[in-house]
Length: 148
Image (tube, rainbow, N blue to C red; front, side):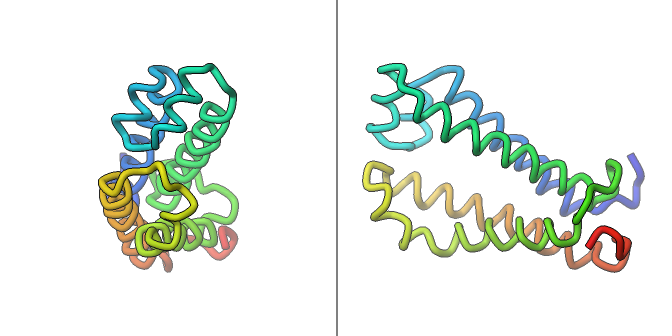
């Protein structure tokens, strides 16, 4: 790995990979993992019943988080530059930061999620969003104009 790689984007990518693996664990290990991570009793019960919904929703999150990790690695210079990297990094940082700040607005839509889930996950989102934001600002001039 190049010593000039952006450490903030590398850390953001690593966090996304960890989050994706935790979500994948929910799919593999089922209801107990959904409960442990605070996804709500309804999601846990649907997983116990073998319904498709928890697996589908969680799979989308896994793919999204792995994709975002790839963009973090791309922006950091650790892998080949992906299309629209600059744009993607701004959007990813924005989504994480908004999710971290606006959780109170989301809470009524997911009443089964515990307050602990909302506080912890929102803090994590703010942290990852800040890593993406700082890393993107630092890397902006180094990213070629063709990645915008």
